[in-house]
Image 1 (cartoon, rainbow, N blue to C red):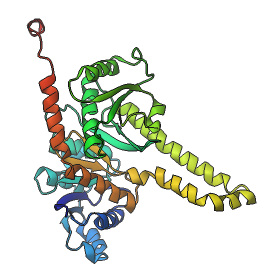
Image 2: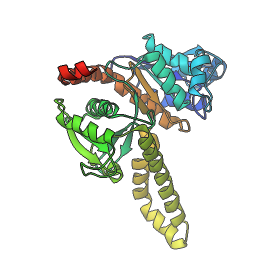
Image 3: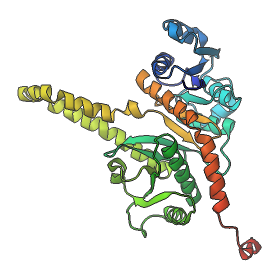
Image 4: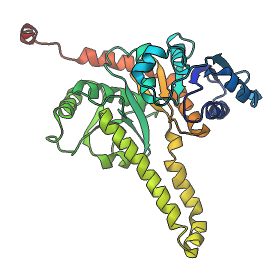
Length: 351
């Protein structure tokens, strides 16, 4: 039997909160009966939803607050005035040790700002990164950063590579995941100084990392590597492009099968195969972007997801807790720092 785990939940975050949040908790409870929940939000709205599901009475506790973070709120504003919001209190529960992780479908920028302010970063990590899963021809690929850091230097990219590699081993169960730096070409001479310097650092690192080298955009869904590393500007564009492409193909397929009687008949025979494709590419199955590098587990659910997607985001948080992700990150960065060459005397003198 799995050990009990407590997850704090921003019950008021997301486009359809708190209804979708509570229903997501119910679905997660079916798969993860050992998990307990602290739900932060308007008790007058959350409690009646919980009463519809008696099975949740023993696993959910509501912490009342009538404040929440809006989707258009600026992160700086939330840091100044949002300390009684459902998002802040849910994150703070992790910092206080009341919960092992937090899940929110609220404002991404605000959640990152609050999480970084309250939880801080792990030793050796300058910036946290948003990581997500992509379905590929070979299985699944982890990609980071997906939008937390627009500008990144070589050190940031190396840190992302280490965090992504540990995630792939801890959560995906890969013994030796491969790492690739997203670039405009696979040749060593291509790319800006940051990616070229990061590549050299990863090649020369004494960590047991299988660095593949540079990968291109078409390598992401091909599954060329297990972990794709890039800056947040490029990563977010790649993510949104992939989501838009899935919607485009879904729309085109639906329209194609409605064009004629023969097409409709063909759909009857192709329905089972199309259902498998739909399930394989369903973004709800990959819902739950992880804020890696924080001194605590924080997971961002898509704001417009349904209960199935929110339940999957909860599952991501539980996986990170169960596999001791942060402890493994600490260990890897201790090894990275120990392996780093000491500065030369001449360099020290020039400083």
